[in-house]
Length: 375
Image (spheres, rainbow, N blue to C red):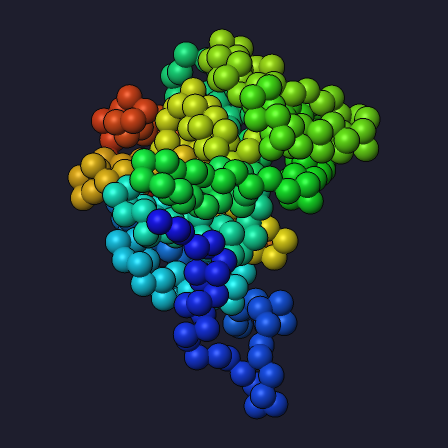
């Protein structure tokens, strides 16, 4: 059983679709298409995803309306249950047209190896090479550890998520882990640049080079080389299993962390759990031209559908990150502040934070703060 690469799969779908051509007869490249903005308003792709995603998107629209954010949404639905990828092509085309998106998690069927993950395909096709998650403790949320402030830089397009698997003979399966020097360097430089621009003092690379000597060994080697160009920033390296123990016992030693794709998804969930769970923290998927914003832990929350119990703060924070990305800092700050006041001052908490508030209670409180700030 052979599984073709993600890029050839999407290329085949694209070839089957009508080509976009100008009157002169040449194809329009995405790099030549200006991002959509009409009458001073930004058009943004909205990908509701599965589980509680559609409900959360409704809250985002409502809060944006009260904040007066000049944003219009182009909603694209994705169907992860089919091997027909035209919906994925439409979503990717929309993001290329609009430049950015807000996204709920798209569930991937575990029992269908023939169906590619739309989450991974999208990140690969849009070259969203880094997933940045800022994990910071909330004073209004009671947790075992306080004053955690860690920024995770996860490799987003290579590593263990290459989705290149095949069965040589019955019962023998291989999975390829792809690591390239240019992509490692790009990620490491992004992390060091971000650390310098934001006053951070230390960057820690997380790896398993003691076992994966070639792949993670390359990642570690490139990181050490890049670190020499940033003498003002301390560089450390740590093995992933020790990293997980250190995060639980002494998380304050970490500042900025650089991780491979698989280690990044594990550690991001771990750190989010330390500071309150999946309902609060947002994540940004960043590339040279495009960006997608979503909750940090990428959970679908399927068990909470329609129960008015899901925490909307992570998606609202993702919306605020989106506005900041668009240069709408005023609107972004209003929403960020409203969510912060709701969680830390008013302490309107849903079940996941130990409270009894409903989703609508949280959203209404956020809207009340937005209305007061926008007067």
